[in-house]
Image (tube, rainbow, N blue to C red; front, side):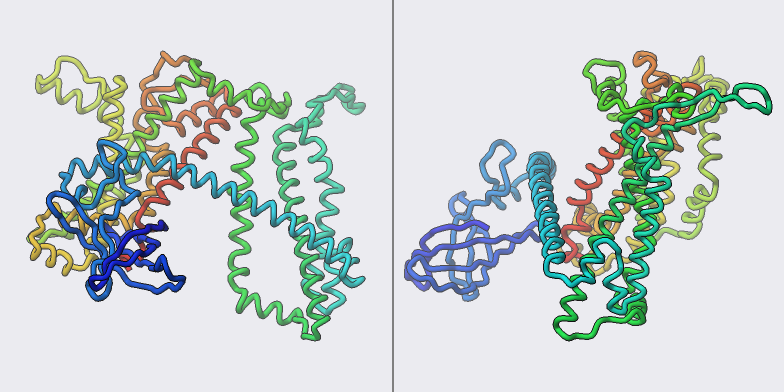
Length: 592
């Protein structure tokens, strides 16, 4: 929204008007719908406006006309587009005068210039959400106090005995569930949870003690504390406490609602009606309960546990069983990000190669797979089923076998080198896996061979569902094949396959199979030295580095946790950015 004060000419009469402009982006065009208010009047009227372009002596005017065709606003300056060569606005006509390469540069610049603004908006939204959360907590605290003060005696008893209010109002099922949950929580905290939580701050004090066995007449080693179990079960106990607080609050809220229903004289739902509602109007809660529990226990809990390990001294020496590990704060992160250290240098280069690998692996397979599908679908191509079958056969072979075979195929003593030497083309074997740059190129090329069939199958169905009348209309308008691809095929493909591209990009960041089965992360990069207990190589990505330092006799779990945390942050940030800008979430109405 932006307000402009200008002189309008309607029907030959000049009137000073105040315009409040709101623009909606639709492809390469902008439509405006403007409430117009006279400077001399407080009355408002809605006028549907359409924008056109005029060129008067080389000067661009963007003119808005009303429904009757009267020009009422001219020479509008767009503030959301910048010139390539400076900070001045770039009008639509100026943008249309750019060639295709300049337009690409312009869009790239707009994208990268907009990244800081995007992050600023996200931080502002995060701040607002934190503020709303704080307000919500405060409102809940006030509501708890008000409910206890004004509630019935049944409600007050429910503050100590969960479910008591529901049981006394005839809702025996809800009351019994609340009561059993409270009983289970108390028993767990008394017999197990309290002990785990008490040791959570130190992660244990005594690893082993020697006890005398009078039967065998020897001293035996008895394990007392286990840091790994203390960390895991202590975290589970914290989750259980949070769940109990939420359930207790829900119990208090239920009691307040029951008091309000009783005061109004309305009927309270029975347990039978509760069960029926879980299979009817609240069936979504029934379906989501188990998946939500699974996500918390098998996704959120492991992620938080992994992050916490990065703040401990957990490694092959301090294994938590024979030798306890403890909290070390940010020491591991300081080692990873200390400027100039071998560890930070290795992390920076491995992270850069991981992102390069993920981008090339994702988009090379995407576009080449799409082009193969377009070639097979092209009119005049015969035996289309045969070509699709040939490509699909590569998927039928297990990737584990095919990648190991290709790795041996290009080895120094492999078939490729032997054949080239027999033909006299080379004098000595080409070190496909021994040269860092060549190994990276080979990995990218072989990944294309592995990934194209998948993309061909995915894009074939999408291409066959694009309306053919769009292509026919484009041909009538004089569009060539490249323009049809850019304006019709690609927008539809990106709209449908946007979520797949995102998931494929994330999976390529964590693509362990292709890298490890082909090169095992090599060739070794000895300039980095021993980074985290592992000799990383030129083709090592973050996930293979993480695997390398957690296996072997000198496993370094704390640094693996730091690497895993960084992978999680990188993947999360990139996923949020890509998910925000992809057409599938921004312009759904254009493809509906």
